[in-house]
Image 1: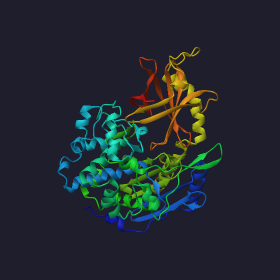
Image 2: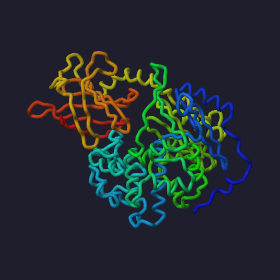
Image 3: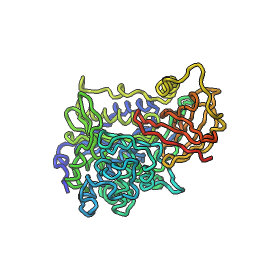
Image 4: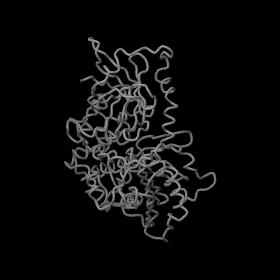
Length: 523
């Protein structure tokens, strides 16, 4: 095993970064951003500092370093590190090719994509570096399939029903599904559930005894599981949000932990210590793909980390979000320094964790003047009331983008009345949609078709608004908050009998095509 950095164990104690001045800034930031809490941990050489601000649960449960939060996509680094740990163990002949092992060679009955070449040739490396070409399809993450709770196997098997529209190994297409596939690989090889594997190989050896992969375990733990809160600007109050089933997104985003636990992970990575071999630590830091690039800098993606530079030093980081919690983890080997930040704000968890982590990092690196970035100024407020206002202002723009040739003065009627179009529609990957007639979220007196999907990990509501003829726009909002998510093209199709047969929905996530799905009418 690689040994801890001797320099980390010697030298004078570091200064506690959580000063009174810093605490005042955090308190004001939480108020500005409508965030109930944030918890922070810093590893500086061999010293660790932790602090909680605000409330883990309102009105009176304070946030502490031991408070539990969903970590979202910060889970990915654990899943990828586990895979390499299994590779380096040399115990599994199926992994003889290492990261170049085809996924289908291990889970061939389950891993079937709509692209035959990718099904056969996609490797563990492709999945870890988001290079398979598989699109996001995050709205297809169902809490149950066929009456059973969704796990890694069920999620992977559903991928055969999801459109595949991109070329493999051409550019990065961020995919939660592929990290669930990596988890399924680990579970298939070992015969153990991912949560037990992580506990045995990573959490346990690091002393991360308050880290879980099931919200029921977290609720039963002595540590307090924070409550996710949404700030309702119209009512000037917080609204409690339900907990998501962690196992659904497992290896991609299902971990629940505390900053006190998570900082042990960061220390391990900085000091290149046990339980990982030197080879695994090297692989963790090795670029797999290009995450982002411009004329000034390139950010690579490694094993669950974004690798960039700050002040001529290499920095590894990853943000995580479950839609209800937000996290950020950062570590800079050359500075022997790392930051962990968790928040329970639906409105601004990612913004708050990013702002505070970057401030701590820039303070540590003593950046000033033109070298220092005002992160808060760069991040838009992101308040929900502003998002709702922006959604209303974008409505005409969205229609112009999707349907630039639509008739403006004489809108063509649909082929069937809205009441006849209502009913149950289904897709083998995205599940069942029960569309009922209701009123538009923003336009009084305008009737739309609406389906609510509380059965999905990212619970949402889809409203179909008529455009012209049989063409509609599908507007998706978060179910429990009403905040906007996306808009997609939709078109009703009809059978030879003139009755509704289905809905074609052309999906796009953050401007990236996810292909077209057909929701078939079943009632």
